[in-house]
Amino acid sequence: MLLLEFSRIDRLRLTRYRVALACLCLAFVAGCASGPERPKSSAATVSGDARESVRDIPQEAAALYAKAVAFMTTGDILEAQLRFQEFLLQYPDYPGAHVNLAIIYAQNGNDQAVEGSLTDALIIDPEHPEALNQLGMLLRRQGKFSAAEAAYERAIAARPDYALAHYNLGVLNELYLRHLDVALLHFETYQALAGEDKQVEKWIVDLKRRVQANQRTANVTE
Image 1 (tube, rainbow, N blue to C red):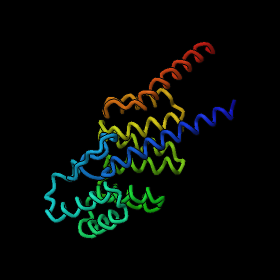
Image 2 (spheres, one colour):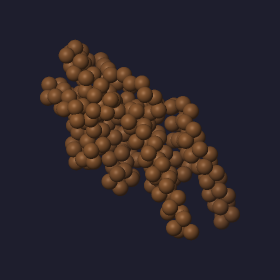
Image 3 (cartoon, rainbow, N blue to C red):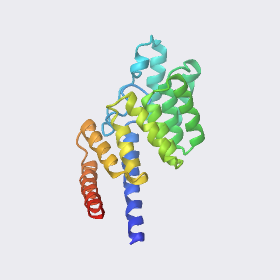
Image 4 (spheres, rainbow, N blue to C red):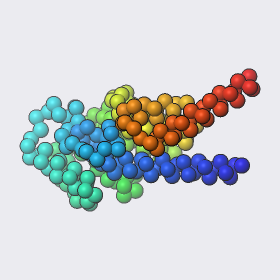
């Protein structure tokens, strides 16, 4: 029975990972503009996020940033990395560029570089939602689940309608923290924000069943 349960959890994790990876690929501009608020959408904007857009961004800076994002969205990761690094040499105080570099480093499995880029972003803006979401992902990979939860919660506090952070909190609470009721809440919030997602809808149905089963068991044992 334990082997079956482990196998089931392993399959769930693999499924969640694949969906999260698909979301990430469709939301490669996590550090810029609107960020991955709708992970299932292939549409992306290139302007700065709410904090950056109020600044007088030089035209040449916007053009260089847009070029880096364009390479990122077409999958030319090496060229995107070079362009973001070039951008940051000239304009180091834009946290979105640091976050996009962190995403690229994560794709390459370089967590040390991920941490460095996210640290740079959060020094500039300690409540940058995308940076906090990426930090949560890094901490989860490192097995620091409570710290990951705190990072995701800070991302949501900074932007309550940040769908991808709700999704990640759902995954974390279901598969790692085993807080099924909390996972259900965040998946439902994600669904409401991101629109219909048939896969997540199935998870919600399954979680409701498991939460109810746990409640019945608790009532019997009391």
